[in-house]
Amino acid sequence: MHRAIVLAPLLLLVAPGAVAQTPAPPTARIDHVAIHVRDVDASARFYVALFGLREIPSPVAGRRWFDLGYGVALHLLGVRSAPVADDRSVHLAITTADLAPVVAALKERGISYTDFAGRVGAIGSSRGDGVHQIFLRDPDGYWLEVNDALASRPPQTSKD
Image (cartoon, rainbow, N blue to C red; front, side):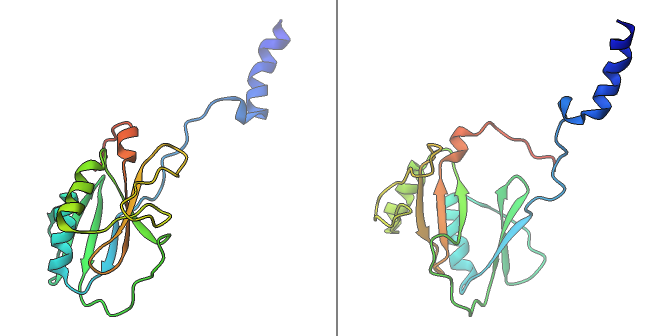
């Protein structure tokens, strides 16, 4: 019995995986996404109208910044001259708890959307986790995924 009491702490030193450990918090996280646009004001109207983004102060003239939540911002930078990738796999994903208001806003504005396969007006559910998603292009042609993953996630709090 004495031997078992002495050996137990030694086993913990030899087998560090035997004790459940809380993973360390990430040392990095996303801060912002910046995209070059032809018309900063037109792009700003698009993102505000569809997603209700709140504008935050930009320290640089000619740029507009928007709060995406959880400490992440969207930076709209003017004077885009390079072409935008025509690849649905290269996209910005925005999540919401309910796709219906977004779909209604798209229809109201005559903006086309597809599922990932490209079927116009279809809402996809091919992710395997039950999340529904649509794809559309912003005024500059950037691909956006809008999904309802927020509905299935527990509420998070920001540490900012």
